[in-house]
Image (spheres, rainbow, N blue to C red):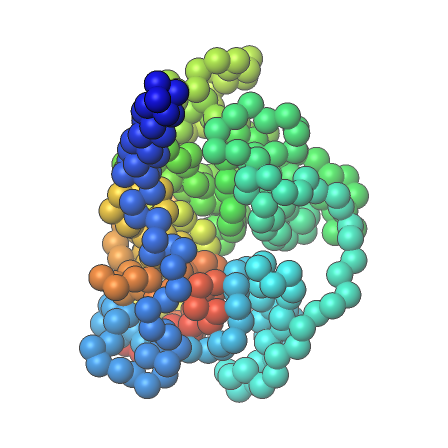
Length: 354
């Protein structure tokens, strides 16, 4: 009887600990993992009312492509086609574009390995991009929420030649800088960065960083504006005394992914030099946040002026209709947004006055 009472007490204590952990960290997880309550492609194509997605006046949104499960990274080629990575499906699809519409979809089955990267564990996605210097850059996220990495390639950005040669470190201390791009004004590299989890609803901030060659950005010992993570203070390396601060702090757990600068041609003057950023949406927050595209206001020198919502409505009272991922912004007032939850690509067009 005594053993049974002890066992019951242990189980009740474990249940209480689990309930507290869930209440503190996982209350808002369900929108990110549960199926969409409705088909966003059908809603948009039929222009149903009330229309859930809200955009500024002068902008319209449509479904450009669908049936792309897990659509993530987008890239264009010299012929105007769009290539889409489908991470969950383990494939790449080329969208053949003709007269502004998708003429054909073709899956690509012959990848050629040019470099070995660490696999598995924690943040497993890898984003690639060619810089102004014609080198190929790759972001490699951390293997954990917060830890002292054993693999020297994790939580960093590397660069290499097109053929994979001259593989070298570019920047470090980046927990999960999933997406990056370059400013057309000064050629600097900008990256979105996801802060760590399990510190509450509002810390640490997610970030936008300007990436410098040889720079160290603080993870796992610092976050945001060089705030020390007091839950993780042991073993600070010798170079930790001078981390590079975030350029812009964002709402914690927004999960910023794709980012793209706004060109001048075809866009309102007030949008020039600005940055669109997709917030994939939270899981580690009691009240869900994100699930939208925001406009980061910048001046011509990249100074931060403020943030405002650009597209909202994916997060509803009954669930999440989609999760925006990558962004392609083009001259002529056109942008494309991938959605890995709904499996679609949206097309946004500016129809207002320039």
